[in-house]
Length: 224
Image (cartoon, rainbow, N blue to C red):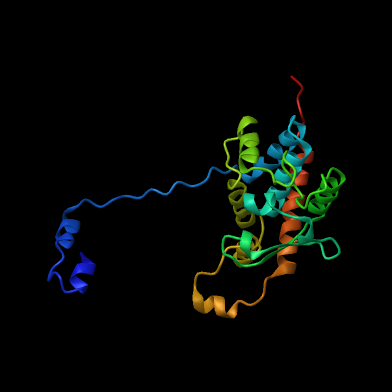
């Protein structure tokens, strides 16, 4: 109707009156299920003790350690890793914001990469699927978490990391936001924010890895 008015075909838009009479719609946003950060280490330990394939276990732990999205981890290739600098450069094509993202890798993340190298299938993918030349499917990681009894979405581990950062560290909010590869919505602020805060993020991610490891060391498995 607005288009018709603009074309001069109508003088009014009858839909305007109808819109005023309709009840307001409440859009309830459903958030991804996330584990409390205190339970993340237990989840990882349960995954390690499960019968899942080694590649799947390593991929999930790597994803949690780096607070990345599923596709960013599953489609990671070896050329993106710089072992000397301990960084992982995710190309813009695979990022939600379509901007290249450099991830500072913790010591445990580097260990995982070496473990993955030891069982590499010769393809470019760090975490290959069962079919050669194909990455792990998103369903593989999601199914594993659910089957082990955890009420959490894979994406929810990003929330676990963010909550931990807010409650257990004094890291500036922009550091954890950049670790999550969130973009600055304020254009004026974004114009001046030229640093990627790499070293501050490196410190934060190492602390996150240490937290998970230390929590995991306190978990005692009970044989049934």
